[in-house]
Length: 194
Image (cartoon, rainbow, N blue to C red; front, side, top):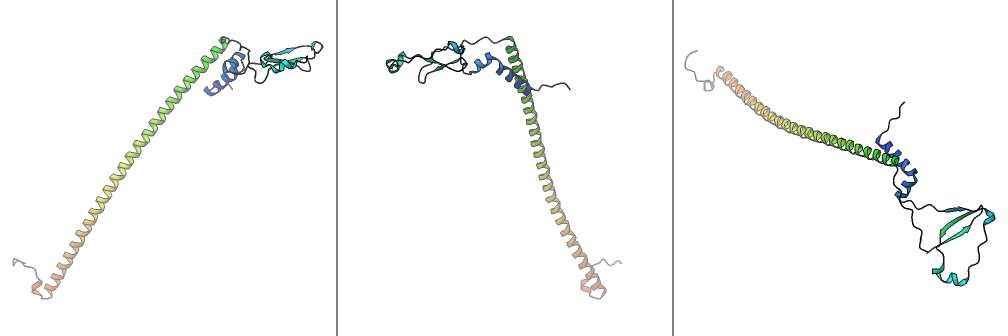
């Protein structure tokens, strides 16, 4: 199965490779490495006692003290309160490999920015489409409610007309029945023809 590199994995690889290079550690701002000196144990001389006057005058003290350690290791540690007079090493020019890795990382970062921007515009277009669909649905719903209210009003008017027509017919049938029963006042006016 081939290895597929994503922009995130390339950025992580770049950071790991750049972090392992000593020049990159100096550029990032890591503290300078402690200088060590290997001295065979037979060559280590016991420290001489310093006179009391030298301890009283801080300007005569050296900035760093070499303390012998077991195994011939001497650490160059600054005294507390003393200013560090060491000059940091000058920054080295980046190597071709480091420049290539930085170019790859920059290209991947630009590609990632483009993909993110395309994704953002697609998401915004989708949100705009959803908002337009929602507005259209609200408009259709309002139109439906208006039409439903108009239909209900028309049905109410129709029911009122039906009720009035039924009442008229019932009154007419009652008048016809009364006329046949002999109540001539309730008979309709005719032109004399039968």
